Image (cartoon, rainbow, N blue to C red):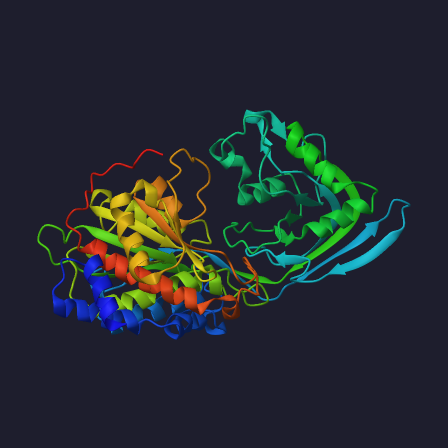
Length: 497
């Protein structure tokens, strides 16, 4: 087995000396499933309180990562510090609150019902504190957009009432790009619009933890499951599915008062003076011609926090952080590469990709000196590997392809970058790509365990340690190979699709 590995590493790292090959093999084997799982498991524990950006729990997680980088001898990126901090408000949700209805059926009879967390609703991550009651009004997308001749509030009074809002925006024929609606269709904008129209509460139709919605003073809201929405319509002898289809297809408001009375309670504590940090450690390059070029690999460190119940964020995204940490530790033991390798643990992704966007404003390495940024998000459940954008950058992808072929032996897929995409970026990698960086991504394919996205059941038990071990080993081999490849052309253009 050892002889086979020597042959494989010689094929992959033809520039290496024999003693260097032995070191690579040694530290390759030092990466284990138990190590990678251990990092993710620790970050998922209550002591970090869901790693909400801005909160003490996030700061503690960032310091924990920084301590490991220091222990491994990985250099701090910012002088003598691994951290660059930014202001960030946050809201501590003290309990799940409550959500109930006095429902009128089609005969006018009253039915009282209380709903439960997390089955029926999630409290708003940035809801105001207090209790409100009011008549329920379905307000469609909750958009007021004169520039598009569209207004969900036209002809309907919501003062003192609780509105129920759909995610998204109208999509007529020849679907309009997100950017055309971005200034009216964001969740925070919709909630502010409801407040401006006099609503006292919002039921947002999308049962998901969403720290990115901005705090609005005096606005209490929660996120509800669609089966609850169906109940509200059915009680009035209405078909919610047909109303929603009409809303999406007719480019015309379908708002209506449902007659039910909602009572919504939130127990929260808003903090305007929080902060979060991006965490970056580097292994400096040694080649006089290449050391100023950098390969960055990153994962967002923050999570959804605690909504009266801990959201551990194991897959999203303790897994990506853990994969990188294990690779970083192993790489720190090798002879320094020709190019610099940077490990980027990003804050406030769940707040709206804020950490990545802040980095883009003032990058450590200019775009022309950044070979690539490789993003890991939710990389801990599956049996196969995916390298997003590899076909567009073959000089980069070949190192990942060779490493997998010669040792990892997982199914590997790739694609071209979608250069035409102009919509809302959903990952740090997409945000950095739109800011002019060569941004690629690593994923798992063929999921084997149930996915709990932004859910309190996103626990370490949902992870697959074996694929995490192989992802870390794959990164370890590929990053080191790429960092020592003198032939990579930074002026390389993306290949045509």
